[in-house]
Image 1 (cartoon, rainbow, N blue to C red):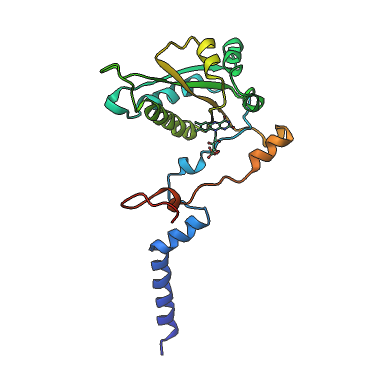
Image 2 (tube, rainbow, N blue to C red):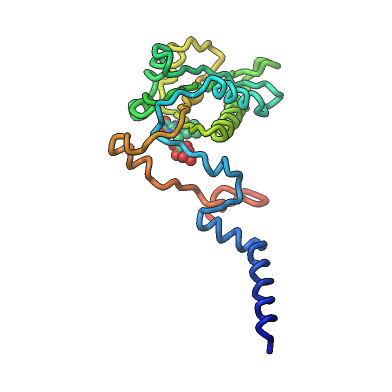
Length: 222
Ligand SMILES: Cc1cc2nc3c(=O)[nH]c(=O)nc-3n(C[C@H](O)[C@H](O)[C@H](O)COP(=O)(O)O)c2cc1C
């Protein structure tokens, strides 16, 4: 039989293998403590509770600088942004007014609102740019990562009146409002009304990889 020293050696080797093998990672994914993806992506979520603390001007510029460097089809850069801070209350309220009631209730406290806008047509041939929404979303994706890296949180909203936004913010024909984006530092969930507190504390869920990743070809109901 093996001596105690040999047994310990085998055990150590087995543990080292376990730590390195894929099985170990899979176990962690199932526990939802991945540690596999970038920590900024893990940290990001869409809060309802925001602090009143203003977002520093330099950070606002960095958000748009990050958006600026997003890739886009034919490098068209179809995204446009309009923003207002709580310090300019008239401009801020002009954007706030467009929000659906359920969004305005919490977004009235955020220090920064941004509207993303997409140029509808290609600057190359004037035809509809199929990728305009995709590319605008990509630039917002960059903005999200930059925001998270600077300790900020972002909550995007589709729930707003697009026509009112067009009117209130002088958006010309040829451009479509895409998403309203609330940005700020994290606030205290306890400061929210009870129903929003409940929402804020609800566990985040996602589809399984199997439900949206198909190898080789489309496979439904696997
Ligand atoms: C285009 C878009 C529109 C959204 N619209 C709203 C909205 O109107 N109101 C809201 O509370 N959240 C809205 N959300 C936030 C989503 O509900 C949220 O991203 C999703 O539940 C996943 O949660 P997470 O961002 O915390 O991971 C929107 C998100 C996106 C990307």
